[in-house]
Image: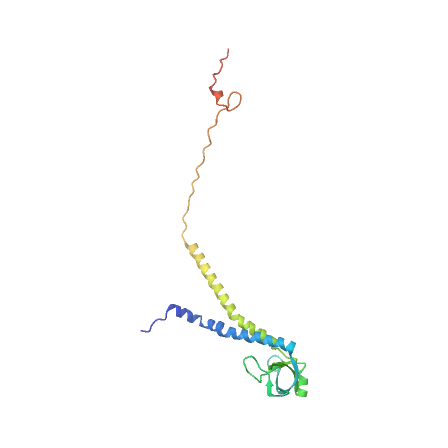
Length: 211
């Protein structure tokens, strides 16, 4: 007989994809997004300009949206390392998007102006790049999405619990309750005296007989 999985493990298995997204995918995307955005800000303020050689080029305009990408490489004075476009995961010699206006000149001269950080030349991008900043923001949004799914799931679960409670309360039989109000009797009135007052001494005086 196959042993039955405990209810707690079965419940955790149902949430395994979401747990994996929040524990692995979300931190990775947030790191890449914020790190890329930070690198772009540093390149704008501290970047040094260098002329890089275009090693490959590619244009996409037939089936999908129009786009232009290149591969480039450059060397620094006194440094034998051949630098290229890279990302935070360690990949190098990557395709990099460029603007449509710069595309004809890049193809004509075979070179492109590149910004790089002096303390880390692997952080570089073309001076007139394409959608690098958009990719950083997209990575941040993708990292936030799993947590939005968690919040949405908790909200739906809470709403279903409240709905079940309301249904149970509406299904509970109600018993009519009758409330009897007892009317309070008015206090006895005291007749007025001879002079129109309510003095009790007036009722004890003997009345004079008329002649």
